[in-house]
Image: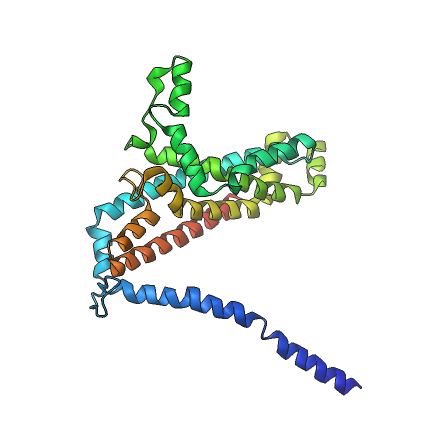
Length: 296
């Protein structure tokens, strides 16, 4: 009897090994293999159509690093966008979570309202905000004219120096509610006894936040920072919706730059750009995690 059970158990364990196979196959086919191909194409001058192409070694990466001013402009725009969005969105999401962490009817309604933009498509958000930013009949300039503040009117997305910051405002409005939910989950996991003990010891609000809330909400902050950084680098459809295809130099970021290069039939060069793009995201995420550990 025991030998029969043992045989069944062994067969069951052998069967369990087959469960990851479909997921592993999809991963290898749709991610690992294309990644290896991207490295291969990055070392060539392939145009995406020709059957033949030649190897150029590291020339594509050399050009990106030393001679491609358009790519350098996209990197600068993306860094401005990322820093602005990460700081503003993280602070706003945490602030909203601190005020709405208690579950009441009012807080539940406000959570839903703040989370609502997240369920909208990027294209619809972009077109709504194009109306808001319209310098002639847009919401912002119309409101400023209505209250007599005509001197504060702007061309918004048409301003080459500040267009990327108006893009950042749209991005923060779009996803702050989503990050708020992450923070609320992190705050609700903190034991209430810690706050009660700190209150009895005479700790004020700032002291409780600094020594209890901030360290214990660090895992949620890590998720928010990583996700927000990736969002900022992948704001492709939002940029195209706001700035057109292709966007102007003031709104061109790395994802749109790589897309435009592919569209120009420079597949080898675009593959090299995409690899640089990937390395930048990984590096920034790693730096964030290191900084977060030290701050906590």
